[in-house]
Length: 138
Image 1: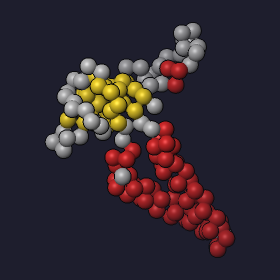
Image 2: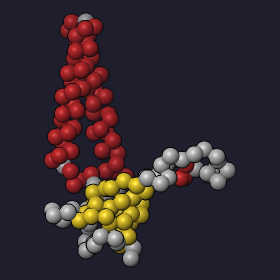
Image 3: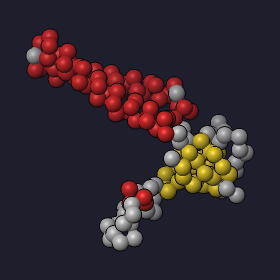
Image 4: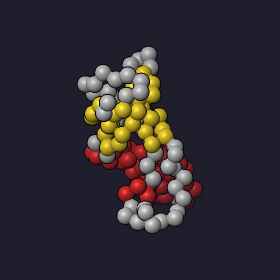
């Protein structure tokens, strides 16, 4: 996934922050010209922390950023599949050992533990999931 962005901040730790327009699902739709559905995301932009790569950037620079598809899928698995799997396993174990009320408790417990674990993983591997500047446009 590639997107154009503008460098808006370089903080004291030399982290680069860019502002990129939020893309709606309508952006790649072939019927976008004929559709009269309002897009609530058109004018919004999000500040995003990125890796600068080999580029020396300054505030105001236009850049192209990219996040690898594999990284995107891995992040989605951490955020969605892992907690959902923990929820299912917790419910199954609880149901097996003590019935319905234990299934609810087991599901809640393992789901909460999975969320805490995901939070720890993302803190340790923060830079691994960041988009990277692939090109300086100006």
